[in-house]
Amino acid sequence: MASKTTGVAREVFSSRFAFIAAAIGMAVGTGNIWRFPRDVGAGGGGTFILALVLANLVWAIPLLMSESLLGSKARLGTIGAFRDFMGRKFAWMGGFMAVVTTGILFYYAVVCGWAIRYFFYAISGRFTADIDSQQTQQLWDGFVSNPSQTLAFHALTVVLVGLVVIRGLKGGLQAVLNITVPALFVILVMLAVRAVMLPGAGEGLRYLFVPDWSGFGDGRMWLGAFVQMAFSTGAGWGLYLTYSVYMRKKEDFALNSAIVISWNHLASLLAGIAVICTVFAVQSPQYATEAVEAGDQGLMFVYLASLFGQTPGGTWFLAPLFFLALVLAGLSSLISMMELAVRNVIDFGVSRRTAVITMVVITFIGGVPSAIDVDVLTNQDGVWGVGLLISGLFAAIAMMKYGLERARSDLDITSDFRVGTWWKALIGLFPVLFTVVFGWFIHLAVTSPSETWYDPIQTWSLGTMLLQWGAVAVVMLLLNNYLARKTARGPITADAGAPASDQQREEV
Image (cartoon, rainbow, N blue to C red; front, side, top):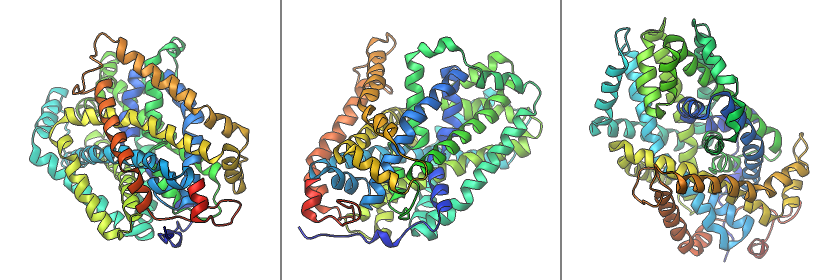
């Protein structure tokens, strides 16, 4: 087959700051602001944070380095990158990764729409001093039970993201993210500083940072830490791979990945301080514990919303800033998800404009079930959130197929921070680590008396996950030859700088 090229090498980030800002925006999302405080509450505070740090070190950083190599050398989206690194038979793995992330895109846009709605509530002064959790619960129930509102804000979110992505790299993604990402961190710092100044905030800090050492034997806590790590950092999503398609030739693979993970973790801690310290400062410890364990929607839109009016400056300062931060975080992550989907469509020879319009329509339609039924959203959150661990495993397998020493050498060429055998060891241990984490998840699902693990239609069950993962895997396998044939050829090299021929790529 004649070689095809996408010409994407002509479109690169203008600077290292632009790339890192975009990558941090990719990683920092609603998972940092509303999922992290929830998971910290469920995982036991400081115990969970230490487990999360370890997960970042052994999983997220080496995996982002792998994704950066996949994207920067192939200069293609997930499908083309996996095909060129592993051979034609493995294009389906890139397809599976793309579907998992697109599945998250569908319901994530709905969540971002919720944030936009609550930002409007906040700036209109809805969260006054006399509002309580019962009233905010009624406000929440009234909103999510009204499809005309949830669908409208879902559509608004998708259109906003589409307008950014359709403008391309420099006119769209880079221009917007260079502003929104720094603004997001400024807001998070302001919220965290204000929270720690509240009387009684010390209890929240103690809960957040003092570990309960007995909790390290809790397998569910470790599973939660690894899922949160994958959901928060973007490791295994293919998002970092997609941005690496536009990476300049001489970028520091190792240091860039470490910087992105560090800033992402900082964003989580700032959001955790802002949320948990506010809850502990304004209410009793018992109420605070109930709030942080109330789940995503309960913590953000019911418990916390009711506390803004009780907090000095909460109505006119904290509430608008908090929900603005939630909106900015959601949009920055959605932009990267949309770009991943669009990049794969462009690789089929479609123009960016057509690809974006197509994905905007598909994203809106795909998010409709989650927009009209919170149980569907919860199901999708579980299925594709845990599915990220499988996508991460595929990225590690791609490195093994490519050759760990060869990959390490490629990473080390432009890295100031030496990529040594530690990276090879961590990537080589991925199948073992995945087996332990995922095996424990299966064990908990099968042995828990409160779960019917085999029920394929239950909101959260192993059965529904296996059914949906299996369906996607089967479809991708059936489409493998088509995907491998239709996706463009990228400039991946067979050795240190010499372009590989089509035959050489086929033999990789």
